[in-house]
Amino acid sequence: LLNFTSINGSYINTTYSNFTVVNASFINGIEFNLTLWNVSLINSSFVNYTRINYTLSEAYLANVSFVTFTAINISTANTTAVNVSIVNATFINGTEFNVTALNNTIFKASFINYTRINFTLFNTSLTNVSTINTTAINGTSVNSTFIYVDALNGTFMNVTDVNGSISWSMLKNVSYVNFLSVNGSLGNSTWLNVTSKNASYFNQTWVNLTMINATFVNHTLRNVSQLNVTYINASIYNVTSTNVTTVNLMYVNSTIVNYTAVNVTEFNLTVWNGILNTTKFVNYTMVNSSIAGTRLFNLTFVNYTGIDGSYWNMTWLNVTFVNATHINFTETDIVRTNVTMVNATAHNSSSVNVLSINETLINVTLRNHSFINVTLVNSLLVNVSFWKHYRKNFLAKDSYWKNVSFIHGVGHNVTIVNGISVDMLLFDESQKIINFTNVLVRNFTVYNSTIKRPVFRNVSMWNSLMLLTKIRAGNARDVTFIDVTVNESDVRFHDRVNVVACNMTMAQKKAFADSGALARKRRWSEQEMREMQEMAHEETETYIEQAGRGEEDPEPEERETTLKPVTPTPGISTSSTPRPSLSTSSTPTPSMSTSSSPTPSMSTSSSPMPSMSTSSTPTPSMST
Image 1: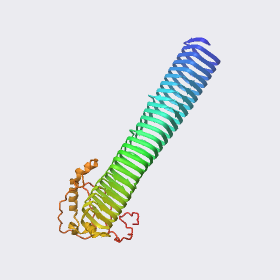
Image 2: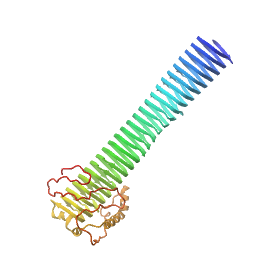
Image 3: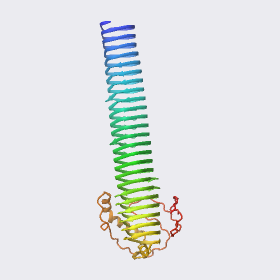
Image 4: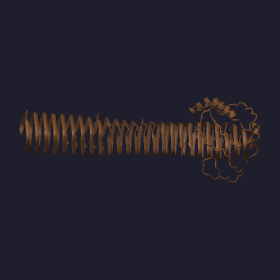
């Protein structure tokens, strides 16, 4: 059929086979119950055309256009379409099988209840296209572009997309299964209720994406760049990301499980009310992050760098950092359990209202770090140093510390209960209201430091040195000093009960036992203690706040304060029976159980002393 024109034509119950149409025009026509087999349609057009119950197989279309076209109940098989243009078209209840499309353009079209099986698309462009209840199975798309595409209730299975681009599109209730995208681009699109399983994305660029109620399972991302991507109520399982960079990535009410990130860098990351479970990060960098209301379970960070981070209202369980660096981060209202840091550093950071249980720090350095209302329970610290730190209302309970250093720091209301410390150093420290209860200390060095109002209860200090150090208004009960050297220091324990000093020179013993107010051997009343603590708090509040902000430390002579003399209160018992524990700060601290039963007697000889229970909760015994 050559150079053919049909106007207002009707083709009903017709079959065409071995049929060729060239340079044909069909205008205002209708086809009903048509069957075409082994046909060719070249350089032809259909305008204002309707097809109903249409079957096309073994066909070849080239340079064909469909304008204002409607097709209902159509079936296409084993067909190749080249340079086909579709404008203002509607396809309802269609099936395509073994169809190949090259250089096709679709503009303003709708596909409803449409299925494609074994399809191939090359250089295909879709613009202003909507799909409803569509299925695509076993397909390949190369160099295809989708703009303003709305997909509702779609399924894509065993589909490969190469050099594809999707932008300004909306996907709702869409499912991807066994999907592969290479050199893909996603932009300015929204995904709602999208499920993707067994998908891989290589060499991707994603910009301005919003994914709501999305589920991703068994995903692989490699060489992916994400900008302004938001996940809301997302569920992500078994995902691996390699060589990924994200900027302005946000997770809201999302869950991530079994996630592995390798060589990943994220800028301006935000996580709200999320869950991360069984996640591993290797060579991971996070800059300017904000994480809140999020729970972390079974996480591992290897070669981690975190810069300018803010974390609050979080729960951590079984989190490990190896070779980690934290810079300019703040954590507030955090509960941590079984957290381990090995070969880690932290700079210019702060911890506020933090409870950490079973925390392990090995080879860790913290500089310019503030601890406010921080509690450590059953902590293990080995080779840890705190430089120019600030601690206020700091409690360590049931701890073992070895080779721990505090340098150029300030402390206020620091409490250590049921602890063992070996090779500990205080250098150029200013500590106020420091409490040791049921503590064993060996190789403790205090140099050029000032400690005011220390309270020692059931403390044993061995083989230690105090040099150029001032201890003011000390309170000691059931304390043993063995092989402790005091040199060029001013040590005054004003209130002592059952204090023993062994293997020390007489001059050194006097520092603990014999001069001035030390000889009173009386206990202050709770009211006196409270008054002194309040006075100390008022005297040093401004200084402590300045030091906490990293301002220059004053000289030791400048930070001295003079105590008002305390007049003994008549009727105060001088017996050595234990008294109830006292609050050591005007700011309430968590309650501590410090068993009120008498402590066992301790050997004061240089031979090893037996292990002793230091609280109602048993702690590991230690050979001294």
